[in-house]
Length: 187
Image (cartoon, rainbow, N blue to C red):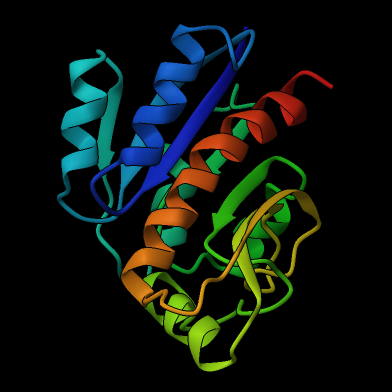
């Protein structure tokens, strides 16, 4: 059985999808050992409802060090699921190849510092992109620069807004995130 640690910052909808996919067998041979949040958020309640251990580590100078100390040694994969904190390069290096993230755009476009949530969707609309989607990638010390594992995309319609793009991206995330986790852990 492989062990996951999931890092969150918000409501935990992708966390819930991962839990559901473990329960229904879409993600095989894995359990969530720990959910860590960088702030109080509803995602912690979701984890607790499934009897998953939770922890809050507030952002600050020593965040990466505290995070490092909290992650069990038997962790096979760290999953960033709507996690907004930037991790120190040393932490990323230690967990290279064992840490993945989901990004709400088709990387390498619209990635990097400040490119999250509505900022990404607004940038896609302003650039008059013909398609958008989501990307699951390995985490490296370069923000959104890691090797791409899976992408899913859709056509951007003329009347799309940042809000409608966010809804479409979320559906793509629900599809590709569990597949990527299963792929990485059970290849």
